[in-house]
Each structure stands twice: as C-alpha cells, then as structure tokens.
Image (cartoon, rainbow, N blue to C red; front, side):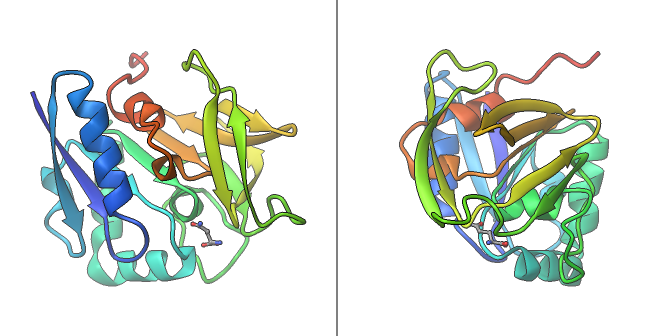
Length: 197
Ligand code: GLN
C-alpha cells in the first residue's frame, strides 16, 4: 500500500519528517509518497498530514493566507490522521494564549508558547509513551507547555506535564520526534491508529 503523506512546508522542518514517515512505512512493508504543502489543493489528496515545528505565528499566518487552514480542518473532519509537532501542536491547539496565532482547533488542548523547561530551552529526555514498549528519546526545543487538556487522551508526560496527546485522528507532541532516527511516533500517528469508537 502507498500512503500519501502531506508535510506542511510553509515554514519549518520538513525533510526530517519526510524521512521518518518513509522509514515508518518501509518498516511495515509499505511505501509513503511525501508531498510538500505550500499552497492549497495538495492536502485534499493526502491520506495523512504533518504539521511540523518552526514558528507558530508564521505558520498560522501562512496557512490562512494560502487557504490551507480550511483543508486541514476538512481532513480532520473526515477522520484522517494528523501529526502536529511543537509549533505544529501550537497551531493545532484550541487556544495558544497568543493573538498572533490563529489556532486550527484540531486538538482539545490549550498551550503556552515557549513555556516548557524555562531554565533549559532545549533538552532531550527519555519518555514513556502510551502504546510504545520502550522510552522514546524526545527532543524539546523551545517547546510549548500544554496547560490544559479537554476531551483528549494524554499519551505522555514529562515532570507531570502532558507532552503528547491524541484527540481522535490528531496526535500532538511538544517535542520533535523527527530529530532522532526513531520513527515510532510517526508510526503511532499514521500506521497504528486507535480504532474509531
Ligand atoms: N517556539 C516556537 C513557537 O512558539 C516553537 C518551537 C519549535 O517548533 N521548535 O512557535
């Protein structure tokens, strides 16, 4: 089976995510065709979408300008998977406590930008993640704090704070799963979906 994966590429890291999706697919004997999304008209043809890290204010502005925001909402409304990481999680949240970020309201969480790990802007930590047998090496870079979780499942916490959540077809992480060669978060989001109730 070939999975068409759209990586939002208006700003932020793309190639590492593309590589992780391709590895996760080939580990299952499948293939992934990765498309970069910089304009409207591509997301509707994708089976799964990825919202990467970067700068959430810029990403949300460009998504709205290009009309990609509506396509992402339609994708989720159709029950199709999305993985949103770091700034992507901020954009996917219900509220980012920042007027400059127009959130997509795909994940029932509220976030605070740049608030996680105040003393240490960037760090790596082994994380227990629901659905994974061994700890995941999570890289946090000026990560958002998930300050409240509504109707969403917490998949992982760090120092008592949620750092990975699932809300239906959408998985969000405060950390950057593409920056190690461990593709289990991509697999969890795209290939091991929770059964729909
Ligand atoms: N600090 C960035 C923001 O608030 C997110 C950082 C990242 O994606 N690594 O948008």
